Every structure is written in structure tokens, then in C-alpha cells.
Image (cartoon, rainbow, N blue to C red; front, side, top):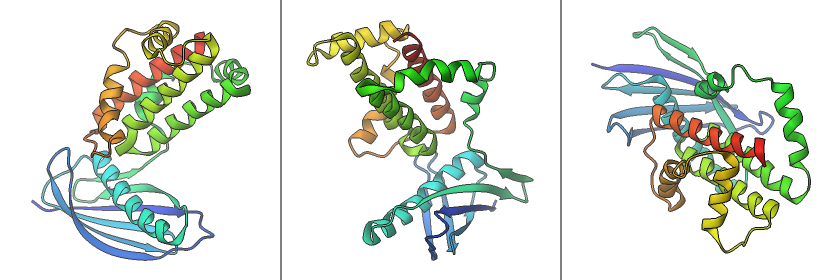
Length: 239
């Protein structure tokens, strides 16, 4: 059974024009599935054709496509000194009736936070962004954005975000900078989370931190996001 998928996207900034064309075979590490990709970038407009022997979860395949395009842009950027960004905006499979425009949202987080008062949350957080301690909170929040944007590195960025809060905890509570056990204990106490709450996030981060390949499905990412958001929000509310 042959399945054909089409993905569309855009390279930013559009004022820095780029055109590339290449093809490749690839394997999805998590599932072991293989497929063929043909990628065309013309004046920053991305089109990717995927020919696969099996049906794929469109979100998992979107993440694979993002990794393929990101790697090529990284190669180009390395030699040219250009820092491009991009997004995959749409995925289609006419045979399966799939035609999905991808948003910037992470559904599990959107659902988690659907009833919050956004204005109240933002007003409470803003004072915590000031001074040296605020730099660490800002880094945490920016790493969480990177976690949302980088499927393969989700664990890495989620864990580094929490590590920034550990550094914040040291400054805020005048802790011994060499006593990590004390630091983690205090952070978890402030965040009102369990003793082992950080463990699955660290487990997901460790392979990537050491240069290994991550094996995260969409469901794995959702669990990571919810675990991380609970810890970060709990800490920021109470610190």
C-alpha cells in the first residue's frame, strides 16, 4: 500500500531568499518506518512530497519533515553564516482525506490552560522577570518555546527550562551553589510537586544532552509538556 503525502511551508525571513532542491530516503526512528522524500524550496516556499509504504500519523510525519528541512537549512547556514527559521504550515493526503493546516499551538497545553485568566497570569509573572533572577525566568520561558518548536529536542529544552528555575531557586533562597540535592528539594517544595516529578523529564533529556538521537512520539511529547508545565507553573506561582 503506497501512501503519498504533501507538506507545504515557508522559510523565514522571506527577504533573505533561498532556493534548494534535494531528495532522500529516511527512517522514522520511533516506528522503524521508511519513506522517500523530495524537497523543493523555491524563493523560500517549501514543498515536500513523501512516498511511504505505510500510513503515518500526520503529526509524527510533520515532525520528521521538519527535521529533514531543518537539517538542510543548518548545513546551508553553517557554510554561509545564515540563521534561517521556517515552519511547515500544511499537510495533505488526498487518498486518506487528510488536509490539515498546522497551527502554532500545542493541543495538550491549550486544553490544560483553557480556563485560565490570561491577564491575571501575565500580571503576576511580569515582576518576576526583573533583575538577575528575572534573566533565569526569561531563559526558562524561552526554552519552553523552543521545546514546542523542536520536536526532537523537546526533552532537552524542557529539562533546561527547569534547570534555569533551579538556578533561580539558588539565588532566591540563598542556597549552597554546590549542594544540588538541597536545590532540587527546595525547587520541588516550592513547585509543590512530587519527589520524582522531574525524573521523566531528565530521562527524556539525557540522550539529547549527550548527542544521541531522541525517540519521542507525539504522545510522548504531550506527556513531557504536561509534566514540565505543571512544575514550571507551580514554581513560578509560589517563588
